[in-house]
Image (cartoon, rainbow, N blue to C red):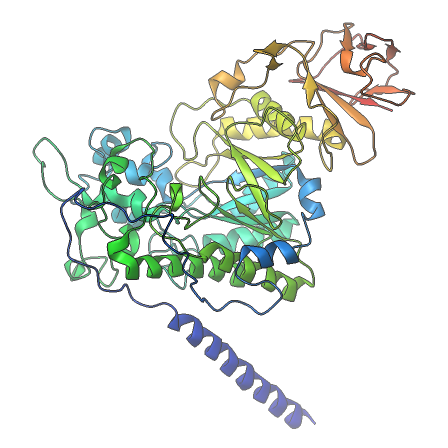
Length: 586
Protein backbone atom coordinates (compact mmCIF):
# COMPACT_ATOMS: atom_id res chain seq x y z
CA UNK A 1 0.00 0.00 0.00
CA UNK A 2 2.86 2.37 0.85
CA UNK A 3 4.39 1.74 -2.57
CA UNK A 4 1.06 2.43 -4.31
CA UNK A 5 0.48 5.57 -2.20
CA UNK A 6 3.97 6.77 -2.95
CA UNK A 7 3.44 6.12 -6.65
CA UNK A 8 0.15 8.06 -6.61
CA UNK A 9 1.75 10.93 -4.68
CA UNK A 10 4.67 11.02 -7.08
CA UNK A 11 2.34 10.98 -10.08
CA UNK A 12 0.32 13.84 -8.61
CA UNK A 13 3.52 15.75 -7.99
CA UNK A 14 4.59 15.44 -11.61
CA UNK A 15 1.12 16.34 -12.89
CA UNK A 16 0.84 19.41 -10.66
CA UNK A 17 4.44 20.36 -11.29
CA UNK A 18 3.86 20.09 -15.02
CA UNK A 19 0.75 22.25 -14.68
CA UNK A 20 2.64 24.82 -12.65
CA UNK A 21 5.43 24.88 -15.23
CA UNK A 22 2.85 25.36 -17.97
CA UNK A 23 1.25 28.30 -16.12
CA UNK A 24 4.70 29.75 -15.50
CA UNK A 25 5.63 29.35 -19.16
CA UNK A 26 2.41 31.01 -20.30
CA UNK A 27 2.96 33.89 -17.88
CA UNK A 28 6.54 34.39 -18.96
CA UNK A 29 5.49 34.37 -22.60
CA UNK A 30 3.65 37.62 -21.88
CA UNK A 31 6.87 39.17 -20.65
CA UNK A 32 7.94 40.33 -24.09
CA UNK A 33 11.06 42.40 -24.68
CA UNK A 34 10.81 46.12 -25.27
CA UNK A 35 9.80 46.66 -28.89
CA UNK A 36 11.94 48.66 -31.33
CA UNK A 37 12.09 52.32 -30.38
CA UNK A 38 12.08 55.02 -33.11
CA UNK A 39 15.15 57.22 -33.37
CA UNK A 40 14.99 60.20 -31.02
CA UNK A 41 13.71 63.51 -32.28
CA UNK A 42 14.69 66.87 -30.84
CA UNK A 43 13.09 68.02 -27.59
CA UNK A 44 9.61 69.57 -27.92
CA UNK A 45 9.50 68.89 -31.65
CA UNK A 46 6.13 67.12 -32.02
CA UNK A 47 2.71 67.41 -30.39
CA UNK A 48 1.13 64.68 -28.29
CA UNK A 49 -1.60 62.75 -30.06
CA UNK A 50 -5.21 63.68 -29.30
CA UNK A 51 -6.38 61.66 -26.28
CA UNK A 52 -10.10 62.28 -26.85
CA UNK A 53 -10.23 60.75 -30.31
CA UNK A 54 -7.79 57.93 -29.54
CA UNK A 55 -9.79 54.72 -28.93
CA UNK A 56 -9.19 52.80 -25.72
CA UNK A 57 -6.99 49.80 -26.54
CA UNK A 58 -8.21 46.40 -25.34
CA UNK A 59 -5.03 44.71 -24.18
CA UNK A 60 -6.44 41.16 -24.12
CA UNK A 61 -4.28 40.15 -21.16
CA UNK A 62 -5.24 36.67 -19.91
CA UNK A 63 -6.94 37.00 -16.53
CA UNK A 64 -8.13 34.51 -13.93
CA UNK A 65 -11.46 32.88 -14.78
CA UNK A 66 -14.56 34.20 -13.09
CA UNK A 67 -17.54 36.52 -13.48
CA UNK A 68 -15.47 39.69 -13.65
CA UNK A 69 -14.47 40.80 -17.13
CA UNK A 70 -11.90 43.52 -17.92
CA UNK A 71 -14.36 46.38 -18.31
CA UNK A 72 -16.00 48.78 -15.87
CA UNK A 73 -19.54 47.57 -16.62
CA UNK A 74 -18.74 44.00 -15.59
CA UNK A 75 -16.80 45.10 -12.50
CA UNK A 76 -19.60 47.38 -11.30
CA UNK A 77 -22.25 44.76 -11.98
CA UNK A 78 -20.55 41.91 -10.13
CA UNK A 79 -18.83 43.62 -7.21
CA UNK A 80 -20.73 42.90 -3.95
CA UNK A 81 -19.90 46.22 -2.28
CA UNK A 82 -17.53 47.62 0.32
CA UNK A 83 -16.24 44.86 2.62
CA UNK A 84 -17.40 45.17 6.22
CA UNK A 85 -13.84 45.03 7.50
CA UNK A 86 -13.01 48.35 5.84
CA UNK A 87 -15.92 50.00 7.64
CA UNK A 88 -14.66 48.51 10.91
CA UNK A 89 -10.97 49.33 10.39
CA UNK A 90 -11.09 53.14 10.12
CA UNK A 91 -7.36 53.68 10.81
CA UNK A 92 -4.35 52.32 8.98
CA UNK A 93 -0.64 52.94 8.56
CA UNK A 94 0.76 53.87 5.14
CA UNK A 95 4.14 52.08 4.84
CA UNK A 96 5.53 54.33 2.13
CA UNK A 97 9.08 53.03 2.08
CA UNK A 98 11.70 52.14 -0.49
CA UNK A 99 15.18 53.06 -1.73
CA UNK A 100 14.24 56.72 -2.19
CA UNK A 101 14.50 57.05 1.60
CA UNK A 102 18.26 56.77 1.10
CA UNK A 103 18.41 60.32 -0.24
CA UNK A 104 16.96 61.80 2.98
CA UNK A 105 15.38 64.39 0.70
CA UNK A 106 11.66 63.73 1.10
CA UNK A 107 9.38 62.60 -1.71
CA UNK A 108 10.41 62.14 -5.36
CA UNK A 109 14.13 61.89 -4.61
CA UNK A 110 14.77 59.62 -7.62
CA UNK A 111 13.36 62.18 -10.06
CA UNK A 112 14.69 65.31 -8.35
CA UNK A 113 18.27 64.04 -8.03
CA UNK A 114 18.50 64.71 -11.79
CA UNK A 115 17.35 68.33 -11.39
CA UNK A 116 20.46 70.45 -10.94
CA UNK A 117 20.34 72.65 -7.85
CA UNK A 118 17.52 70.80 -6.10
CA UNK A 119 17.94 69.53 -2.53
CA UNK A 120 17.86 65.96 -3.84
CA UNK A 121 20.57 66.73 -6.43
CA UNK A 122 22.82 68.32 -3.81
CA UNK A 123 22.32 65.46 -1.36
CA UNK A 124 23.03 62.92 -4.10
CA UNK A 125 26.28 64.62 -5.03
CA UNK A 126 27.44 64.44 -1.40
CA UNK A 127 26.50 60.79 -0.88
CA UNK A 128 26.93 59.12 -4.29
CA UNK A 129 28.55 61.50 -6.75
CA UNK A 130 27.42 63.05 -10.00
CA UNK A 131 24.32 61.45 -11.62
CA UNK A 132 26.18 60.99 -14.91
CA UNK A 133 28.54 58.60 -13.11
CA UNK A 134 26.56 57.34 -10.13
CA UNK A 135 22.86 57.51 -10.83
CA UNK A 136 19.77 56.07 -9.25
CA UNK A 137 20.76 52.55 -10.26
CA UNK A 138 23.72 52.90 -7.85
CA UNK A 139 21.30 53.98 -5.12
CA UNK A 140 19.45 50.71 -5.74
CA UNK A 141 22.67 48.70 -5.70
CA UNK A 142 23.75 50.13 -2.34
CA UNK A 143 20.34 50.19 -0.64
CA UNK A 144 20.31 47.76 2.30
CA UNK A 145 17.68 48.55 4.97
CA UNK A 146 19.15 46.22 7.58
CA UNK A 147 16.85 47.45 10.35
CA UNK A 148 13.66 46.84 8.39
CA UNK A 149 11.70 44.33 10.49
CA UNK A 150 8.10 44.03 9.24
CA UNK A 151 7.03 41.81 12.17
CA UNK A 152 8.36 44.29 14.75
CA UNK A 153 6.88 47.29 12.91
CA UNK A 154 3.50 45.60 12.50
CA UNK A 155 3.32 45.13 16.27
CA UNK A 156 4.13 48.82 16.80
CA UNK A 157 1.44 49.85 14.32
CA UNK A 158 -1.16 47.55 15.88
CA UNK A 159 -0.37 48.90 19.34
CA UNK A 160 -1.06 52.36 17.91
CA UNK A 161 -4.53 51.19 16.92
CA UNK A 162 -4.01 50.57 13.20
CA UNK A 163 -6.30 47.96 11.65
CA UNK A 164 -4.78 47.82 8.17
CA UNK A 165 -1.47 48.45 6.42
CA UNK A 166 -0.85 49.99 3.01
CA UNK A 167 2.49 48.61 1.79
CA UNK A 168 4.34 50.27 -1.09
CA UNK A 169 4.99 47.72 -3.82
CA UNK A 170 6.58 49.97 -6.44
CA UNK A 171 6.93 53.74 -6.42
CA UNK A 172 7.42 56.07 -9.40
CA UNK A 173 11.06 54.92 -9.42
CA UNK A 174 9.91 51.71 -11.17
CA UNK A 175 11.73 49.43 -8.70
CA UNK A 176 9.64 46.45 -7.54
CA UNK A 177 9.87 45.51 -3.86
CA UNK A 178 9.11 41.85 -4.41
CA UNK A 179 10.45 38.87 -6.37
CA UNK A 180 9.05 40.38 -9.52
CA UNK A 181 8.55 38.18 -12.55
CA UNK A 182 8.27 41.09 -14.97
CA UNK A 183 10.77 43.62 -13.63
CA UNK A 184 14.41 42.54 -13.08
CA UNK A 185 15.09 45.81 -11.27
CA UNK A 186 13.64 44.50 -8.02
CA UNK A 187 14.62 44.08 -4.37
CA UNK A 188 15.53 40.39 -4.78
CA UNK A 189 17.87 40.96 -7.74
CA UNK A 190 19.31 44.39 -6.93
CA UNK A 191 20.03 45.89 -3.53
CA UNK A 192 18.95 44.14 -0.32
CA UNK A 193 18.27 40.76 -1.95
CA UNK A 194 15.01 40.54 0.01
CA UNK A 195 11.40 39.91 -0.95
CA UNK A 196 10.10 42.87 1.00
CA UNK A 197 6.43 42.50 0.03
CA UNK A 198 6.66 38.82 0.96
CA UNK A 199 8.00 39.79 4.39
CA UNK A 200 5.19 42.28 4.96
CA UNK A 201 2.56 39.78 3.81
CA UNK A 202 3.91 37.16 6.23
CA UNK A 203 4.04 39.65 9.12
CA UNK A 204 0.53 40.95 8.44
CA UNK A 205 -1.02 37.50 8.32
CA UNK A 206 0.80 36.41 11.46
CA UNK A 207 -0.56 39.47 13.27
CA UNK A 208 -4.08 39.12 11.83
CA UNK A 209 -4.05 42.58 10.27
CA UNK A 210 -5.33 43.43 6.79
CA UNK A 211 -2.83 44.64 4.22
CA UNK A 212 -2.80 46.04 0.72
CA UNK A 213 -0.09 46.70 -1.84
CA UNK A 214 0.30 50.04 -3.59
CA UNK A 215 1.49 50.66 -7.15
CA UNK A 216 2.77 54.02 -8.41
CA UNK A 217 4.47 53.06 -11.68
CA UNK A 218 1.72 54.04 -14.12
CA UNK A 219 3.20 57.45 -14.89
CA UNK A 220 6.82 56.45 -14.37
CA UNK A 221 7.51 56.90 -18.08
CA UNK A 222 7.07 60.67 -18.05
CA UNK A 223 8.11 61.05 -14.37
CA UNK A 224 11.59 59.69 -15.17
CA UNK A 225 12.35 62.13 -18.03
CA UNK A 226 14.76 64.07 -15.81
CA UNK A 227 17.18 61.11 -16.03
CA UNK A 228 17.68 61.79 -19.76
CA UNK A 229 18.91 65.32 -19.24
CA UNK A 230 22.22 66.82 -18.14
CA UNK A 231 23.57 69.68 -16.06
CA UNK A 232 22.78 73.05 -17.60
CA UNK A 233 25.84 74.74 -16.11
CA UNK A 234 29.10 73.95 -14.35
CA UNK A 235 31.94 71.52 -15.06
CA UNK A 236 29.55 68.73 -16.05
CA UNK A 237 27.43 70.87 -18.35
CA UNK A 238 26.00 68.77 -21.19
CA UNK A 239 27.31 65.43 -19.85
CA UNK A 240 24.34 63.03 -20.15
CA UNK A 241 22.86 61.55 -16.98
CA UNK A 242 22.83 57.77 -16.68
CA UNK A 243 19.26 57.45 -17.96
CA UNK A 244 20.85 57.63 -21.41
CA UNK A 245 22.84 54.41 -20.93
CA UNK A 246 22.03 51.30 -22.96
CA UNK A 247 22.17 47.58 -22.28
CA UNK A 248 25.48 47.40 -24.18
CA UNK A 249 27.00 50.04 -21.91
CA UNK A 250 26.67 47.63 -18.99
CA UNK A 251 29.21 45.15 -20.32
CA UNK A 252 31.82 44.56 -17.63
CA UNK A 253 29.89 46.72 -15.14
CA UNK A 254 28.09 45.61 -11.99
CA UNK A 255 24.76 46.02 -13.80
CA UNK A 256 25.70 43.92 -16.84
CA UNK A 257 22.61 42.22 -18.25
CA UNK A 258 20.19 44.74 -16.69
CA UNK A 259 18.60 47.00 -19.29
CA UNK A 260 18.51 50.63 -18.03
CA UNK A 261 15.37 51.16 -20.10
CA UNK A 262 13.49 48.77 -17.81
CA UNK A 263 14.28 51.13 -14.95
CA UNK A 264 14.28 54.63 -16.48
CA UNK A 265 12.03 53.99 -19.46
CA UNK A 266 12.79 55.77 -22.73
CA UNK A 267 13.39 59.37 -23.72
CA UNK A 268 10.00 60.92 -24.54
CA UNK A 269 11.01 64.57 -24.42
CA UNK A 270 10.35 64.99 -28.14
CA UNK A 271 6.68 65.46 -27.24
CA UNK A 272 5.78 69.05 -26.50
CA UNK A 273 5.45 69.76 -22.80
CA UNK A 274 7.21 66.64 -21.51
CA UNK A 275 10.55 68.39 -20.84
CA UNK A 276 8.86 71.35 -19.15
CA UNK A 277 6.82 69.02 -16.97
CA UNK A 278 9.98 67.12 -16.04
CA UNK A 279 11.57 70.32 -14.74
CA UNK A 280 8.48 71.39 -12.82
CA UNK A 281 7.95 70.56 -9.13
CA UNK A 282 5.10 68.20 -9.95
CA UNK A 283 3.06 68.81 -13.10
CA UNK A 284 2.39 65.99 -15.58
CA UNK A 285 2.43 66.75 -19.31
CA UNK A 286 -0.75 67.94 -20.96
CA UNK A 287 -3.26 65.24 -21.95
CA UNK A 288 -2.21 63.25 -24.99
CA UNK A 289 -0.88 60.08 -26.55
CA UNK A 290 2.75 59.19 -27.20
CA UNK A 291 1.63 58.47 -30.73
CA UNK A 292 5.06 57.80 -32.27
CA UNK A 293 5.64 55.03 -29.73
CA UNK A 294 2.40 53.06 -29.84
CA UNK A 295 4.15 49.67 -29.75
CA UNK A 296 6.11 50.74 -26.70
CA UNK A 297 2.97 52.27 -25.15
CA UNK A 298 1.17 48.94 -25.40
CA UNK A 299 4.17 47.06 -24.05
CA UNK A 300 4.40 49.47 -21.12
CA UNK A 301 0.70 49.22 -20.22
CA UNK A 302 0.82 45.43 -20.45
CA UNK A 303 3.96 45.20 -18.32
CA UNK A 304 2.37 47.59 -15.80
CA UNK A 305 -0.66 45.34 -15.47
CA UNK A 306 1.27 42.06 -15.34
CA UNK A 307 3.39 43.30 -12.44
CA UNK A 308 0.29 44.06 -10.41
CA UNK A 309 -1.28 40.73 -11.30
CA UNK A 310 1.97 39.04 -10.25
CA UNK A 311 1.57 40.47 -6.74
CA UNK A 312 -2.10 39.51 -6.55
CA UNK A 313 -1.32 35.93 -7.58
CA UNK A 314 1.56 35.37 -5.18
CA UNK A 315 0.65 37.46 -2.11
CA UNK A 316 -3.20 37.56 -2.05
CA UNK A 317 -3.51 41.12 -0.66
CA UNK A 318 -6.71 42.45 0.88
CA UNK A 319 -6.64 45.44 -1.46
CA UNK A 320 -4.58 47.04 -4.18
CA UNK A 321 -3.92 50.74 -4.76
CA UNK A 322 -3.04 52.72 -7.87
CA UNK A 323 -1.77 56.26 -7.69
CA UNK A 324 -3.08 58.99 -9.96
CA UNK A 325 -5.01 62.21 -10.36
CA UNK A 326 -7.82 61.37 -12.80
CA UNK A 327 -10.39 58.62 -13.32
CA UNK A 328 -7.82 55.87 -13.60
CA UNK A 329 -4.54 54.79 -15.13
CA UNK A 330 -4.03 54.95 -18.89
CA UNK A 331 -6.75 57.44 -19.68
CA UNK A 332 -4.62 59.71 -21.90
CA UNK A 333 -5.09 62.47 -19.33
CA UNK A 334 -3.45 63.72 -16.13
CA UNK A 335 -1.18 61.13 -14.59
CA UNK A 336 -2.53 58.77 -17.25
CA UNK A 337 -0.98 60.82 -20.05
CA UNK A 338 0.57 58.79 -22.87
CA UNK A 339 -1.90 56.02 -23.72
CA UNK A 340 -5.47 54.78 -23.39
CA UNK A 341 -6.04 51.13 -22.52
CA UNK A 342 -8.10 48.84 -20.29
CA UNK A 343 -5.07 47.96 -18.16
CA UNK A 344 -6.73 48.97 -14.86
CA UNK A 345 -9.92 47.07 -15.64
CA UNK A 346 -7.88 43.98 -16.51
CA UNK A 347 -6.03 44.11 -13.20
CA UNK A 348 -9.18 44.62 -11.13
CA UNK A 349 -11.11 41.86 -12.90
CA UNK A 350 -8.22 39.44 -12.39
CA UNK A 351 -7.92 40.49 -8.73
CA UNK A 352 -11.58 39.90 -7.92
CA UNK A 353 -11.76 36.62 -9.82
CA UNK A 354 -8.72 35.35 -7.91
CA UNK A 355 -10.19 36.52 -4.60
CA UNK A 356 -13.42 34.71 -5.35
CA UNK A 357 -11.56 31.50 -6.20
CA UNK A 358 -9.30 31.64 -3.14
CA UNK A 359 -11.69 32.97 -0.50
CA UNK A 360 -15.10 31.99 -1.78
CA UNK A 361 -16.16 35.64 -1.66
CA UNK A 362 -14.93 39.04 -2.82
CA UNK A 363 -13.97 40.81 0.40
CA UNK A 364 -11.19 42.81 -1.22
CA UNK A 365 -11.23 46.20 -2.88
CA UNK A 366 -9.28 48.33 -5.35
CA UNK A 367 -8.23 51.89 -4.65
CA UNK A 368 -8.16 54.02 -7.78
CA UNK A 369 -6.97 57.33 -6.42
CA UNK A 370 -9.43 60.21 -6.93
CA UNK A 371 -11.79 58.11 -9.06
CA UNK A 372 -15.42 59.20 -9.05
CA UNK A 373 -17.96 56.82 -7.58
CA UNK A 374 -18.02 53.39 -9.22
CA UNK A 375 -18.99 50.15 -7.51
CA UNK A 376 -15.83 48.12 -7.10
CA UNK A 377 -13.41 50.96 -6.39
CA UNK A 378 -12.44 52.96 -3.32
CA UNK A 379 -11.02 56.47 -3.65
CA UNK A 380 -8.65 58.58 -1.55
CA UNK A 381 -8.26 62.17 -0.46
CA UNK A 382 -4.58 63.12 -0.31
CA UNK A 383 -3.62 65.69 2.36
CA UNK A 384 -7.06 67.23 2.72
CA UNK A 385 -10.41 66.19 4.19
CA UNK A 386 -13.75 66.91 2.46
CA UNK A 387 -15.68 69.66 4.20
CA UNK A 388 -18.91 67.67 4.21
CA UNK A 389 -19.93 64.10 4.92
CA UNK A 390 -18.99 61.90 1.96
CA UNK A 391 -21.14 58.79 1.63
CA UNK A 392 -21.30 58.36 -2.14
CA UNK A 393 -18.35 55.92 -2.09
CA UNK A 394 -15.88 54.39 0.38
CA UNK A 395 -12.83 56.61 0.82
CA UNK A 396 -9.57 56.85 2.69
CA UNK A 397 -7.87 60.06 3.77
CA UNK A 398 -4.12 59.76 3.23
CA UNK A 399 -1.35 62.00 4.51
CA UNK A 400 2.27 61.67 5.62
CA UNK A 401 3.85 62.98 8.77
CA UNK A 402 6.35 65.39 7.21
CA UNK A 403 6.62 63.85 3.75
CA UNK A 404 6.14 60.57 1.91
CA UNK A 405 9.84 59.71 2.28
CA UNK A 406 12.12 60.59 5.15
CA UNK A 407 13.98 63.88 5.50
CA UNK A 408 15.37 65.57 8.60
CA UNK A 409 13.31 68.16 10.44
CA UNK A 410 9.82 66.65 10.46
CA UNK A 411 7.35 67.61 13.21
CA UNK A 412 6.18 64.60 15.25
CA UNK A 413 2.95 65.15 17.16
CA UNK A 414 0.33 62.60 18.17
CA UNK A 415 -2.35 65.27 18.44
CA UNK A 416 -2.28 66.12 14.75
CA UNK A 417 -2.57 62.42 13.89
CA UNK A 418 -5.57 61.96 16.19
CA UNK A 419 -7.32 65.07 14.88
CA UNK A 420 -6.70 64.03 11.27
CA UNK A 421 -8.28 60.63 11.97
CA UNK A 422 -11.18 62.32 13.76
CA UNK A 423 -11.87 64.68 10.84
CA UNK A 424 -11.93 61.70 8.46
CA UNK A 425 -14.22 59.40 10.43
CA UNK A 426 -16.66 62.24 11.18
CA UNK A 427 -17.18 62.41 7.41
CA UNK A 428 -17.63 58.64 6.96
CA UNK A 429 -14.08 58.01 5.85
CA UNK A 430 -11.01 56.13 6.94
CA UNK A 431 -7.51 57.46 7.55
CA UNK A 432 -4.14 56.07 6.45
CA UNK A 433 -1.12 57.93 7.78
CA UNK A 434 2.48 57.53 6.64
CA UNK A 435 5.22 57.74 9.26
CA UNK A 436 8.34 57.67 7.12
CA UNK A 437 10.96 55.09 8.02
CA UNK A 438 14.62 56.01 8.24
CA UNK A 439 16.84 54.86 5.35
CA UNK A 440 17.81 51.73 7.32
CA UNK A 441 14.15 50.75 7.72
CA UNK A 442 13.73 51.70 11.37
CA UNK A 443 11.45 54.17 13.12
CA UNK A 444 13.13 57.03 14.92
CA UNK A 445 12.39 57.65 18.61
CA UNK A 446 10.09 60.58 17.86
CA UNK A 447 7.90 58.40 15.63
CA UNK A 448 7.72 55.63 18.21
CA UNK A 449 6.73 58.05 20.97
CA UNK A 450 4.07 59.59 18.73
CA UNK A 451 2.60 56.19 17.85
CA UNK A 452 2.52 55.10 21.50
CA UNK A 453 0.53 58.20 22.39
CA UNK A 454 -1.91 57.56 19.54
CA UNK A 455 -2.32 54.01 20.86
CA UNK A 456 -3.22 55.27 24.35
CA UNK A 457 -5.90 57.52 22.86
CA UNK A 458 -7.23 54.74 20.59
CA UNK A 459 -7.56 52.23 23.43
CA UNK A 460 -9.56 54.75 25.43
CA UNK A 461 -11.81 55.92 22.59
CA UNK A 462 -11.84 53.02 20.13
CA UNK A 463 -15.56 52.31 20.47
CA UNK A 464 -16.23 55.74 18.94
CA UNK A 465 -13.86 55.01 16.05
CA UNK A 466 -13.94 51.40 14.88
CA UNK A 467 -16.99 50.44 12.87
CA UNK A 468 -18.43 53.93 13.17
CA UNK A 469 -20.24 55.99 10.58
CA UNK A 470 -21.02 59.66 10.24
CA UNK A 471 -23.89 61.34 12.05
CA UNK A 472 -26.24 63.82 10.32
CA UNK A 473 -23.55 66.52 10.49
CA UNK A 474 -19.78 66.07 10.83
CA UNK A 475 -19.37 68.55 13.65
CA UNK A 476 -19.98 71.97 15.12
CA UNK A 477 -17.83 74.85 16.27
CA UNK A 478 -16.11 77.96 15.07
CA UNK A 479 -16.85 78.94 11.49
CA UNK A 480 -14.45 80.21 8.86
CA UNK A 481 -15.93 81.87 5.75
CA UNK A 482 -19.25 80.25 6.59
CA UNK A 483 -17.77 76.76 6.91
CA UNK A 484 -16.80 74.63 9.86
CA UNK A 485 -13.17 75.36 10.79
CA UNK A 486 -11.11 72.21 10.21
CA UNK A 487 -7.60 70.91 10.67
CA UNK A 488 -5.50 72.50 7.88
CA UNK A 489 -4.78 70.42 4.78
CA UNK A 490 -1.36 69.33 3.61
CA UNK A 491 1.25 66.98 4.98
CA UNK A 492 1.04 66.69 8.76
CA UNK A 493 3.57 69.09 10.25
CA UNK A 494 3.97 72.23 12.27
CA UNK A 495 0.81 73.91 10.88
CA UNK A 496 -1.33 70.99 12.01
CA UNK A 497 0.47 70.42 15.32
CA UNK A 498 0.08 74.08 16.34
CA UNK A 499 -3.49 74.51 15.04
CA UNK A 500 -5.77 75.55 17.91
CA UNK A 501 -9.27 74.24 18.41
CA UNK A 502 -11.37 75.42 21.38
CA UNK A 503 -13.99 74.05 23.78
CA UNK A 504 -16.77 74.78 21.28
CA UNK A 505 -15.31 72.54 18.55
CA UNK A 506 -16.88 69.07 18.31
CA UNK A 507 -17.03 66.17 15.85
CA UNK A 508 -19.58 63.34 15.77
CA UNK A 509 -19.77 59.64 14.93
CA UNK A 510 -22.34 56.90 15.42
CA UNK A 511 -20.89 53.67 16.79
CA UNK A 512 -21.73 50.10 15.88
CA UNK A 513 -23.75 50.04 19.11
CA UNK A 514 -25.90 52.93 17.73
CA UNK A 515 -24.65 55.32 20.42
CA UNK A 516 -23.76 58.86 19.39
CA UNK A 517 -20.21 59.96 20.15
CA UNK A 518 -19.16 63.56 20.61
CA UNK A 519 -15.46 64.27 20.10
CA UNK A 520 -14.30 67.39 21.89
CA UNK A 521 -11.39 68.59 19.76
CA UNK A 522 -9.59 69.72 22.91
CA UNK A 523 -9.40 68.49 26.48
CA UNK A 524 -11.70 70.84 28.38
CA UNK A 525 -10.49 72.26 31.66
CA UNK A 526 -11.29 70.32 34.82
CA UNK A 527 -14.78 71.24 36.02
CA UNK A 528 -15.58 73.13 32.82
CA UNK A 529 -19.13 73.17 31.49
CA UNK A 530 -19.26 72.57 27.74
CA UNK A 531 -22.34 72.98 25.59
CA UNK A 532 -23.05 70.89 22.49
CA UNK A 533 -25.53 73.04 20.58
CA UNK A 534 -26.33 70.40 17.97
CA UNK A 535 -27.88 68.21 20.67
CA UNK A 536 -30.30 70.86 21.88
CA UNK A 537 -33.99 70.16 21.33
CA UNK A 538 -34.30 73.29 19.21
CA UNK A 539 -31.70 72.03 16.73
CA UNK A 540 -33.92 69.02 15.94
CA UNK A 541 -30.94 66.88 14.89
CA UNK A 542 -31.01 64.28 17.67
CA UNK A 543 -34.59 63.01 17.76
CA UNK A 544 -34.23 60.69 20.75
CA UNK A 545 -34.35 61.41 24.44
CA UNK A 546 -31.01 61.20 26.23
CA UNK A 547 -30.74 58.74 29.11
CA UNK A 548 -27.04 58.89 29.90
CA UNK A 549 -23.86 60.79 29.07
CA UNK A 550 -20.49 59.23 29.75
CA UNK A 551 -16.90 60.35 29.28
CA UNK A 552 -14.81 57.57 27.76
CA UNK A 553 -11.95 56.70 30.10
CA UNK A 554 -13.75 58.06 33.19
CA UNK A 555 -15.71 55.75 35.49
CA UNK A 556 -17.68 58.36 37.42
CA UNK A 557 -21.07 59.90 36.71
CA UNK A 558 -21.28 63.19 34.87
CA UNK A 559 -23.60 66.11 35.48
CA UNK A 560 -25.46 67.01 32.34
CA UNK A 561 -28.60 68.79 31.19
CA UNK A 562 -30.37 68.99 27.87
CA UNK A 563 -32.24 72.13 26.90
CA UNK A 564 -33.40 73.90 23.78
CA UNK A 565 -29.97 75.53 23.48
CA UNK A 566 -27.92 72.35 23.72
CA UNK A 567 -26.54 69.54 25.84
CA UNK A 568 -24.46 70.98 28.67
CA UNK A 569 -21.93 68.65 30.26
CA UNK A 570 -19.92 69.34 33.40
CA UNK A 571 -16.45 67.83 33.16
CA UNK A 572 -14.90 65.95 36.09
CA UNK A 573 -12.68 67.69 38.62
CA UNK A 574 -9.70 65.93 37.07
CA UNK A 575 -9.09 65.64 33.33
CA UNK A 576 -5.87 63.61 32.96
CA UNK A 577 -6.21 63.23 29.20
CA UNK A 578 -4.27 64.37 26.15
CA UNK A 579 -5.33 65.86 22.80
CA UNK A 580 -9.09 65.33 22.98
CA UNK A 581 -11.87 63.51 24.78
CA UNK A 582 -14.99 61.68 23.66
CA UNK A 583 -18.44 61.67 25.23
CA UNK A 584 -20.87 58.78 24.71
CA UNK A 585 -24.52 59.78 24.36
CA UNK A 586 -27.25 57.18 25.01
